[in-house]
Picture (cartoon, rainbow, N blue to C red):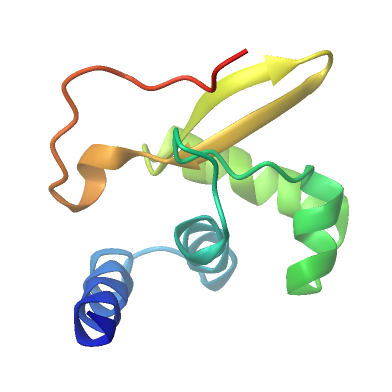
Length: 103
């Protein structure tokens, strides 16, 4: 199992080879960070930025670029806070129904 996870992470690094270092860091953060059942990372941009040592405006700008590249998708919005997950189809996963967090 651990070998499968390592292989998936290596595949992700290979797939993001054309991106900037900050973009790849954001993708890897969303791929490796704990998620809810829908795959959403339930941390604010400020918390995630701090985790990887990025200024919050830089993190938000980079995350927007990663969304535009199709690597992240919004899962929900609570108040003014949006939550995102790694887009399931990017690494060949098959998703029949988009998942949303239970309310």
